[in-house]
Every structure is written in structure tokens, then in C-alpha cells.
Length: 66
Image 1 (cartoon, rainbow, N blue to C red):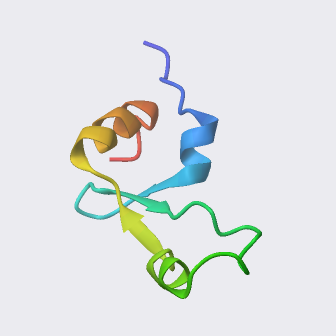
Image 2 (cartoon, rainbow, N blue to C red):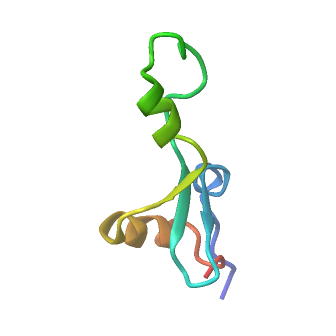
Image 3 (tube, one colour):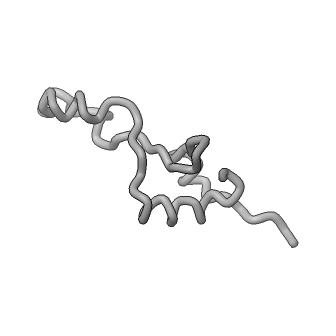
């Protein structure tokens, strides 16, 4: 059988944790930060864990990253 291909967009946007959860960076932080609230900037810092229903879809895009 040939190898399955990983979606290029998914490998750039998501990372897997050691327990198999999917991490992602918060969106909306590239520009226009002056108009954002301090609470938004603080909450969007770092990475977040994707919900299980969405993580199931992303794991199909990255078959070898489990």
C-alpha cells in the first residue's frame, strides 16, 4: 500500500500533544491589536486545545502524527 499523505495546511496549523490531543494557536493576533481588548489579548496568548469533535477531523488530516 502507498503511504497516506498529510494535509499541508493541517501540519502548519496544528500540533499533537503526547496524549493525542490537538493544539492550535489562537487566531486574530496578526494585526489590529490596538482595537482588541486587553482581555482578548491575554486570553489569546499561547496555544489552546481543540474540542474533541473537531480534533477527530484534524486527526484524519494527519494520519502519522498520533
